[in-house]
Image (cartoon, rainbow, N blue to C red; front, side, top):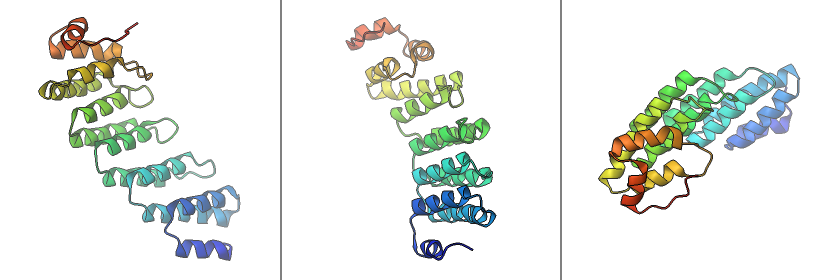
Length: 208
């Protein structure tokens, strides 16, 4: 049986983080009955949680727990996270963790969720965010698909006169190494070399 104080917390709290902490403590105890309760507590926390970021957090803890295999529940958490996502950015984040080796490492499902993110994209910035994730080696590393999204972002940028934003994004020093794959897409899409674009838009960037 569970300690009485733990039962009271389960019955009275709506705090999913508190329930997850209890679940991890139960799972790590090594006591079979507590381990069973740990799994139940994770399920209760999942049922009480509605926002995408919190659901992602639950999914990560379920996938990374070292004591028992809770991957089925982790899939449930990420599925609910995708269903509850309000925008492209939340769907992209959900897909990132689905693809990540240390979490679910399910690249096929991640592709489906990235596609959901694309369908919710509303602006240039959304396309650039998703392209970044899709091109990343930690996620699905699909450069051709990332290039397609960059073209959509460029179309949006041209329409609202924000091509310089794309150029700065390509050369942004954040460790993304976009230049190699994004430059050819950019030059083809805008019909000019990057040096011509620098001159046209009066951009000064230390490229090397």
